[in-house]
Length: 479
Image (cartoon, rainbow, N blue to C red):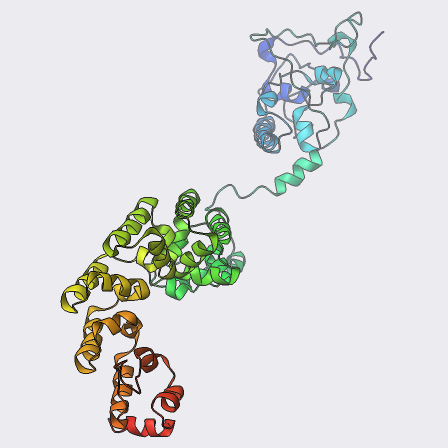
């Protein structure tokens, strides 16, 4: 099948084929369709039809053709960056395109690269080629024809990658979205006024209030019911919350607490008392709960202990085991009684052991209780083990030395040590005034310690003192 003959006029006899050294840069740009300056008088003289012919009297390239070369490099660099960014072309494929002539590109069906960049249609005469510039039509079907050239080929060029469905409109659209090339680019005063900068966070602060609006974690904790004004009073608790991510770090702790039995309305107060649990590992927390279950603590009992002693789950398995062993050995209790003791007052497991040891020593040495009596007092009223020694001494002195209450009665009702000393004094003095202060169980009109300190004022006046509330109030004004 014969190739179509170009409609371009054949070269006149006055034109002659130049040598390799006479083919200037400007002419080569022109024959590939890369010249944006167009036909300019006074520039490089080209033959008719953009064919690679020049006059014998050749002149140096003009300034406009040098401009074309610079413009071509600029556009090729911009197009290569955009192609690599959008993923439509590989930069390596673009740079590997060989420098063929405009006629060869037309023959192979590939448009010149600058033409793709400019988005303009090539003139028809730049897509035609004469029969003399292509190989014979006897080539195999589908094999690209190559132009003949007298220039030597130094390196064999690889076949270029063909770009399919390249949308130049899309390229120009994305070029408009390219951010400024430099952060130091100057802007107008109007644009500068429109810039709204976020307020800077203080490098250090004594309150979490300055960070709530900027921290998603703190905001969600506030919605959960956490009192940040109390949390920030605890050592390094505020710093811990600022370093945690709510979704990654806190959510799993909340789900664990739900499994333990903490209700939704209790999560906020619980985390307010113990924010440090948010920094614990979930597996470590689960191992501590598993230990308590191995000691025959039920789910409801574990929930009660964790709610009353929020710091309980911060103790390792070894420390929990040592605490349970300490109270069992010091008080001489059985396993069951020891378990009942810590269920009713779980803060024994989380508090310091030194006050417990000192109070046990005070009860035995200073108060004169026997070991079995101390055991009964501690089991009935475990709070006495962590009470103030000064308050214990004052209460015992008034009950035993002034009111004359013996040790056995104090052992049967040790809750009297938890009552306020002023309340005991007021009622005892009122009974003395009425002549009804009788604490001996063998005598008539006996008044037990429970009746003395546990009843409300109205009931105490009517049932124990056998008088009115007004008389009791008048008496209080006299002391």
